Image (cartoon, rainbow, N blue to C red; front, side, top):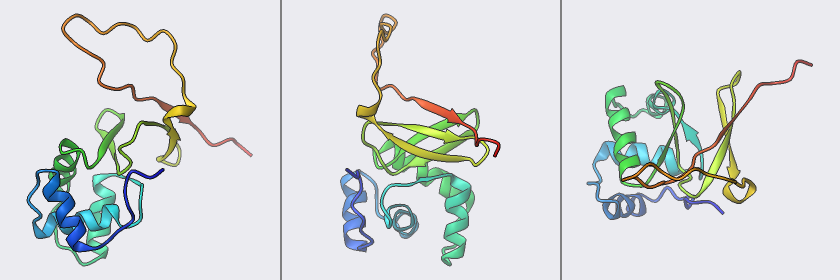
Length: 143
């Protein structure tokens, strides 16, 4: 099941941002529309910035980064770090994991119930496990 309704209605996007504790500014609404209009997806800041430009939305790359992080902190997105300095932002915030095809820079969802963990170590004293993220790295077969 998708965590995001496919919906481009500006009023619903505005309400969604407000419920997440974010002011629905013009730029946030424009970026939210690009992010959520087609359902679950994975996007980098650079990809979203390019899409915004192609859609005629004037926004700096810094604003895109800031907005993606604000959406993540408010629970609208989930950040998937595939390596140091390289993150994707996922509109599917449900419990799930990922395949990452390294030579294509492509993430694909794996439903959470398809992965079972055995013998997860206890968290160090004073901490608790928030969630477990698994990225299975793939490469295309040589044909």
